[in-house]
Length: 508
Image (cartoon, rainbow, N blue to C red; front, side, top):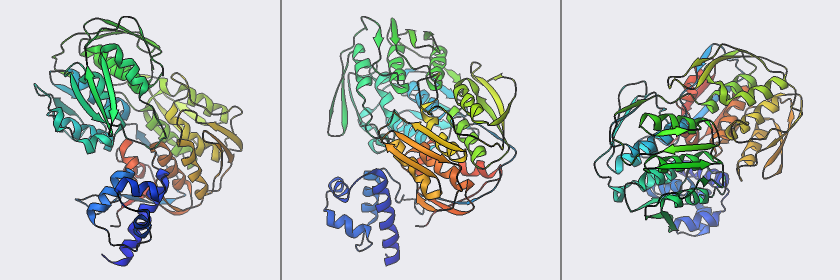
């Protein structure tokens, strides 16, 4: 391998390690080697095998190189271009992965419509396929058919795929009704700091699930039980609520879940469970009453609704590039607080009347965003459980506030590590100060400038950096965008369709 390739690979490894917040010693321990060896690798002074590159990539959850094609994907962005025209919002990533997990409840055929073709979905499909579930894409529109086996082969689970998605934690709810013992790996996904799974365990213990965590695995044992009183979730989390719903769906009785999330993906899951014959009362509230059934064997056809976070991403793209853009199929009921804040900041928008999503329940609009002189919000930007400002939409306000006049305080209190990644905007000309692990002060307006940088390892901050690059005059490079592909389908191509200039390339 030529020396220049060793140097380039070493820089990719160093940047991936630093973005994960690891020292060379921590990486060395994960690889079973020495700190000095890691140092030599990062400086390009040591020959390195493809197997070692793959191990490093797995340890850092970063696609350093992938066998079968020419290496990790990067984006070259020619910024300063105005967007125009119209773009459709895709179906919800978070709803789709919940519904894939929910398909394990059903002995019949499940058909899901317009499923997002994203890495997070692919990882769940790989896990399902490894345990015997047959899945196939029916057409180019993303319609997906899922047929379970009579018996799941859980010992054959693809652990490598399972470790790369936090969504695998939602296997606990459906599996506890199928087997008495099983194991799944620790949940992965974005690097957002410590994210405890204790609320999941507390909720599912009501159904007789006990979990021991050892050697990177959750070892589950089930002594089936019936909840003797309402389940009060200790955290109003989306996946926690979904896991409780999945467990309650096959419990032959009535389960009351309090302090439940009423967010968009939870509602889609409830609508799907109703098609499976499970009655759910209180959808859209914080108290859900589930009338479960012991056995489910139905051929069902369901279309999840559109993704409000992708809608916010596209809205932010229009704002930071000072463009007029129409965003179609926006699930407005899950963006009402965001739109109210933007209205106070001076954003000029126009809405169509409401119409139903393909699930027949979610309300959609078409939203046109026009160039506007924005002012910083008077109050801090902070997330709250639905119907508050969506946790995943907070990062987009960093880029939007950077275009506005004045100072904006952003309080991202949910995740330990996410706010720090938004300081990457400083390399593109922004003035973002990290006040503490959860609070940012953003000063605007910003004169964006081009830069070359590694993609942050958290999904939404990564997209925020991409949007800022689209606003910056000149050519920027965003390296190793696997994390964006986890949550967005063909984002670069779709942005190009409305006037962006983003080139996908690989350099190894």
